[in-house]
Image (tube, rainbow, N blue to C red; front, side):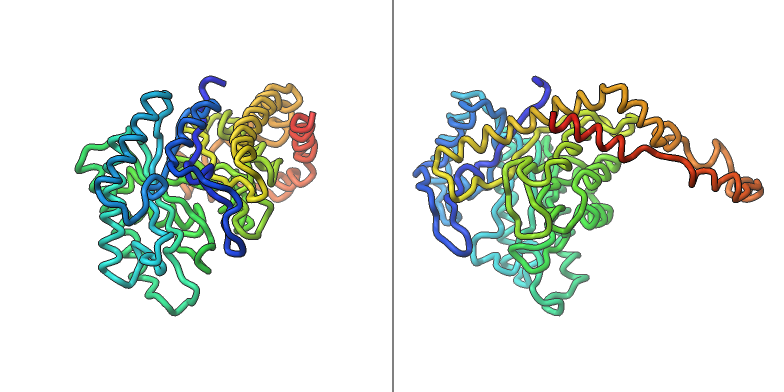
Length: 388
């Protein structure tokens, strides 16, 4: 599995366990850079971080540069790389009503400069992806914001950052991260589909794609595997966040596979093997884990959870390859209609007029209603490989 690379966000392992109902349950390192060394020791290929994961929002330039130098030293000494960066525009009270969609123009301008500064740092460290999660871009009340202008300001902010990346000549793309709710009652761009629609309106849409997260889609009772399949079809899966979730509830951020295991299996199958007919190619990016070690765990449990993410992915990857290689699977793919679904509905060069002129009786077509697709058998084979 040398071709599969794993990355972990510093905000995950440096989370102390505080939540809306309780304070931190773990003692954090005074210097978060220590986590970079530990991740490298555990065999993680890359790390990711928000700006304020390594220095506080109020840090002066001297302290900020000190932390950046320490981060560079850790990378040099361990060989671990920084593959993605993002910006915290959600924790400070300044962003309580959004960053790009805040009613305050001053807040929007401050947030934009904060993001651009992190873009510069990411490029300096070699990151090729910048993730945008609009955690505070939303409302609790349907009449609190003009919805046209809010989406216009959101699009303006994204386009401005994309234009800056092009202007500087950085080897970097933007990946939007959808989420339906939490911390806002309703977050703008709540799903993969919403984000794709907004991307289509941008001037710099060529370098803007998606960073879907397992739990965020499943919170909205959506199928994550189908969602990333659409993103891959549109050539917009620029990054991915893997974790675990048990249906429509709060964002659990469990270890990958510790929620909907069968969907985790099919997600890995799609990422590693592509679609059976080859239209979707295997995903070549990092398998990024954005989760939170349970607040019931000590520091030891934090590092065990990192290992658990990678171990689960590797096991699912091996089982997915065995499932694809099983002759029964290939036979049932054919029975399920895989060999026919890849044939265009209209013949080559067939016009709509030609199509409508051809007779097709109901009796000829109704034979399909008697055909057994074998979907249950095919799913059973996947399940047998998963639990064997």
